[in-house]
Picture (tube, rainbow, N blue to C red):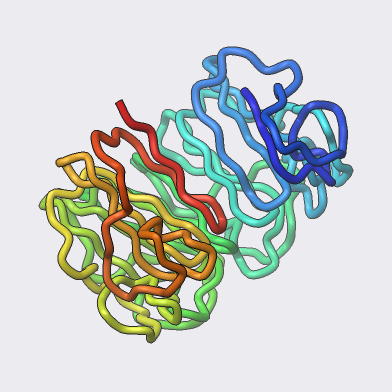
Length: 297
């Protein structure tokens, strides 16, 4: 595994706390099958089903029982048989092979999903979830995809980020209203995204930069369809953006464009999807805080 960028909390995982403008190797990790980033933290899932964390340990974000930073990977306590991971701001999430979800770190607004608002330096089970097939994390919100393609959300709800018709926080999972047959989920800061089996994309939560993709700039506490997208095969979320990969290998983006994160040659926002310039034959996408990345073949 390799990392680059800001390293002040040890989040490059190379034993130091300096920034790096080129990739550096994360120390001591091998047989990594999945990775995730969360604020000033890195997370890795290894082939043996264990999770490793590095960077800031504030609020227990490393999940190793302590609150000190670590510039090298440390093992998240008591987790095995993990199949997927996600990271939020000082909170980590893991999906186990038995379909349960576990969380650790910051919990002040219920983002651990265990019915409380205390932090935890070791993983705790998210309440009432079973048969989960995928997880995602917003800034302070967790999401899970369950049986029948139903989406569940917990944590921060103020902008409608829980998608349940309300704007209050929840320390236990609540179902996102009116969604079924969902095959993939993603999240921005305060916005959730869902890809349905018919190839359409739906969004809820914060929409002030157009990140709902429905032509407006207002929030929505229930899912709304992203305008004009069909035959979508994968989705991703940035801090203030949504991204979609279509079956023809093209990528589409919407939301904030101030830093060029729409990839369309402009720096203006767009409340409807626009094609990312010059990309074809794309096979995978990922969203950073104010960036997007694509793999082509």
